[in-house]
Image (cartoon, rainbow, N blue to C red; front, side):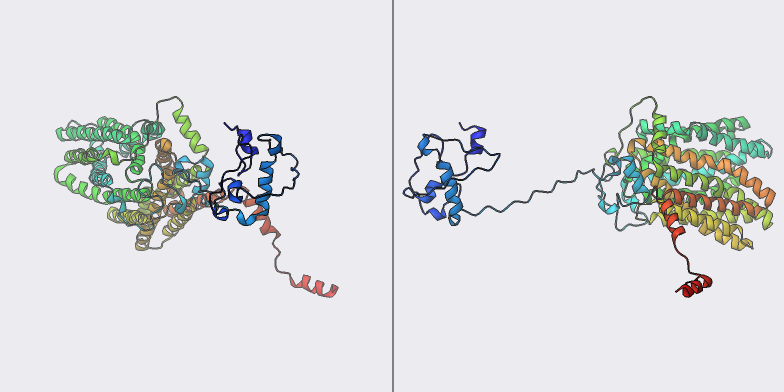
Length: 574
């Protein structure tokens, strides 16, 4: 058997060891034989080859002798003959190009990239453009952003159709209950505004206290199962309140307790519902689905209070609560009828200590997510207090009645609905620079609306203001969901909802005080100015690190136009 070293030392065409230098008989035309045959076969049995010894290059060993000493130079003579007889040497086979290494399926997926790459992509860099993004676990339906799309393209997904249909019914019932609950409190508390404020505060208090824990629960358990439980809980609470109102046993503290219970259910329902959308439609259609959800919510905001007002006038508040309790059945039916195998569910996170801190650390380490939270926090705190500012401007500045205030609120809701539908047509993924531009546009429109001289110009401008408001809200929601790992999505969205919903109760009293002290228009104008400054600051912070200082230095070093005196002095010196 030939060893590895021997095979390296013997050139191709050498006689095998142990053959004693004998050459095989001629087998055919030597010029036509392949190079893989022994050279002795190609030269013929009677050929004489004149050998010239060649010096071995340094570092290489001479060929080992094979057979008796008289035949030790047989391999060397064969090699020298091949070099001189190039015409007898077979052509080299064409080189086969090395196959390209395939890119792993998830090599460019946002869920497999490190946080710095995700951050740079969300800030608008070219690291992960839609054309180059490979499909990930939630992108099984397409490998890239859709080149075309429709306003209702998410409804092509059967599971989302069931979900959206249930939300249309349930959101309408929720807005009906909100109006009926406020009216019931005013009846039971004899028109007390304090009791009404306490009811609203108790309903939103759980979000401030336990909102982040709701995100932990949403990441820990299957979201579809969580939504079934929360919808059942909300329906039972509405049923209890309706029965108390119909029987005449309702008291104010009953409403307080049930409002707090509704807030507790919302703590878990909000992050689970927000992060469940991407599991139904995938990342490609997520912005469209979020916009359709907003359109559904604002459509119900227009329809629900109107229907509730008619029903309260005809049959009282109790049956309205029962109608809302029945509306949750539509959501439960949609969740039950879904096909679980068509859901791109993220694996639940196992129970462990420090998961809440882990979510906060994840967001704190992502500059892109922090900038979105800062922008939305300032806009919600100072710029989106229309329930307070529109009412004050309508009453104090234009001296209108409640009907005119209702018209103004409806125009703002109409603008929000239009903005949601326009956002549903958007195909490209939102980037932070687009959020900054939308924030500036919204702020400018709010300031201009607050400066309108007449009531009707004020009302008309509320429509584009509502469009800009809803556009930035849907884009911010999509940006947060598309830029996070699936196991973190529930906790991140819980923090987003906490900032969005929790900052408004903080800013509303401050805006109301400024409007009362400095005029009703001040609330809109000052809120828009603060929002504009926040958008500009976020835009500056979104620039690449280290780029602001050199840019300012270049501006300072840029030479200005020469003055007349300096030009005359230069001419005189010349």
